[in-house]
Length: 193
Image (cartoon, rainbow, N blue to C red):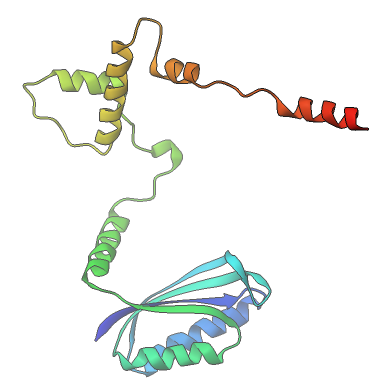
């Protein structure tokens, strides 16, 4: 048995009872045809990227399940026959996708979602430079290592420039503003009239 993931979009103009009935219909269909459902994840009503059948919104549902390969053809046939299903897609999960999914599931229960006040602190430039100067210690791997290296490179460039001129000031001095075109255009219109 293979692991599959199916996503389908239901017409959002249906009542919530009708939407739940459609979800349970496909849940029963998968289980009666030899599949075992792992998760059902209703994503809810979301805006579509483009209009489908004059609809701008759809109700998204994701179902992960194990099943034989023959179930996919039957499931997609059921999707096509149902007029309330706007779009659908079924994927077989490969090894890489399964590893990523396992990582997400293992990290989800151990770490709750961070609120904006609980976001990790990013090291300031002074702290990063101080840790780089200490050559006796082995450098620590952090999530912001790329940002730190970019920040120190910018600081080195700023130190090499003449005093009082930073990288931002040098770039802004090189950019010249074009003359205002709107004023000239209005003067030309008045002359022609």
